[in-house]
Amino acid sequence: MTGRLPMQFPSQDLPPRVRIHEVGPRDGLQNEKTVVPTEIKAEFIHRLADAGLSTVEATSFVRPDWVPQLADAEQLFPLLGDIAGVGLPVLVPNARGLERAVALGARRIAVFGSATETFAKRNLNRTIDESLAMFEPVVAKARADKIHVRGYLSMCFGDPWEGPVPVHQVVQVAKRLMDLGCDELSLGDTIGVATPGHVQSLLAELNEEGVPTSAIGVHFHDTYGQALSNTLAALQHGVTTVDASAGGLGGCPYAKSATGNLATEDLVWMLDGLGIETGVDLGRLTATSAWLAGHLGRPSPSRTVRALSHKES
Ligand code: MG
Image 1 (cartoon, rainbow, N blue to C red):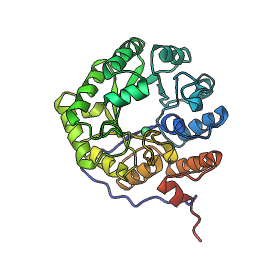
Image 2 (image 1 turned 135 degrees about the horizontal axis):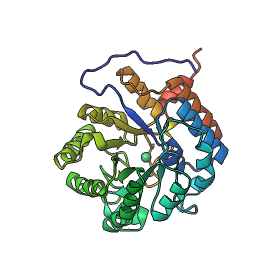
Image 3 (image 1 turned 90 degrees about the vertical axis):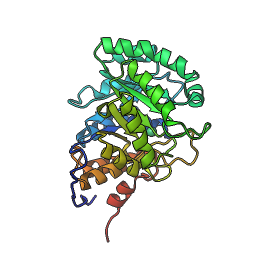
Image 4 (image 1 turned 45 degrees about the vertical axis):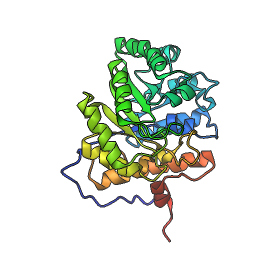
């Protein structure tokens, strides 16, 4: 590791600070075939916190037989109790998942919805209406317990079965998710087809319909190489929460060629260069992703991890 950093050229038109919502241990690992031992996951999350990430989505309380990689949520979560000052949200699919998470002391949860009927059916085995009805008591109970709730909305820019997804359709489902009482909305480009103008159109329409930019996070995939361009477009609109996955872990199992989540290192390289504060130490983060790639038995797909790990001769 060389400790290289980009030169800084701050812009007046961009937010001074961005909160990175790290999704590697949950969204990333969920889509990795090699099952990672619980102790390695715990060390991974500790190392991400040490690297300065303030939010690390830790695991998912789905039915253990649905996602074998995350079947150890009950064993993993208690191993994170000593991490102070870092938000450790967990995904909960339903009331049972919330119960399991709360029993272990989770204070931040996320529910996972879909902007399209086909993905709702395939991923949740429910219509959009039915899935929102399932989330309603989960969000209400969480809010009553003062637990922070993030609502994921997937397929916001395109759907592998339905093709293009109309902006107004996404906005309607987003509003319904927010109306349930979510504190935050994460807009997912699940198959990575978004482009910057599309991102800004969706954000503008959400604002027009009463969803404030301060409640919005963006979740881009780099399938078509657009993730950082889309991120910059979102920052120009005022978005200050960006999802990313350490080392570019994971992808979307429904998009065959998907290169997956925006890598946190690639994001931090850009934000560092723009003088935008994230609190993240790029060297520590890169070392962590290189270490985990060793456990997964393959190199990290992150360009920045590869560039910084390359020994200069
Ligand atoms: Mg993702």
